[in-house]
Image (tube, rainbow, N blue to C red; front, side, top):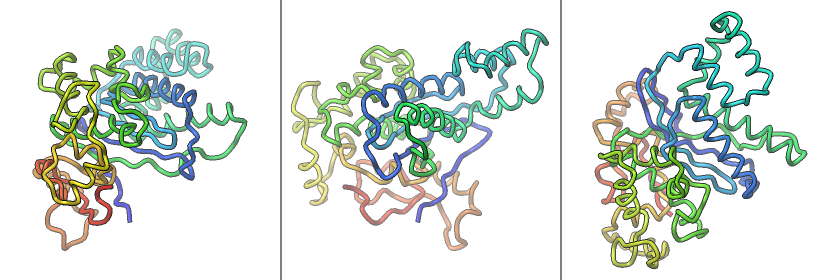
Length: 323
């Protein structure tokens, strides 16, 4: 049974969000992923939520989002964000701009409605999925739901080790799927966009690096993504096959983090909360009423993954942890 997701309020937070296409159908072809990618950046600009990285696959999507602490946007900023999201010819955006220009501010109901949609991960995911579904159904002349269920999310401690591990796990999705050997060659992920020069994508991936400098962050991140038989290496060298890593895992071999991330690790998608033991226990204390009376702490180790021993999880997974 899935544990209810946890969303903190009143402070910044990072979330790994996952949503799947109904029935697991491969409905997101290259044109659809191009459009979803475009809408993703538009939604981020509107909501004030930072995209750390992302990966759009044919039947599901992964987003790593940093939600800032609440801030109070001015009316001018709200109108500007709405115009960026909907376009200047959109009737709703025109209504907002006209009201602002005539009255020198927005009516209270319009202002509060917009503010509720900014800086909220649930609103971000709902609007992104709804906007894309409407576009997709028009293009395909179809009706009905596109997404299988409510999105899943894992709350991630906003510190270097935790965010870096989850970010790399997302960017390695197409590698695990056998689509590419280097994630820079899969254009629907944050790393590929960053390598191609997208400033926002570079900002997101550099955000968890101690220096926040893209050139330095990129060198370190590449070492994590491009694991070879000899350990870590430069782009172009043959990568260690996932099958070989899986065999080593089954023999309880000590795997490097880059090797572990080439496996499917359920903790990254089903762990509910991910971070240091102190962080997971802190969140557990805040949401104590969601758990049974016998549970005394929140932090659980990631079983069988010594390279991730510095990370704890909220959910104690025991079946099909790694595949």
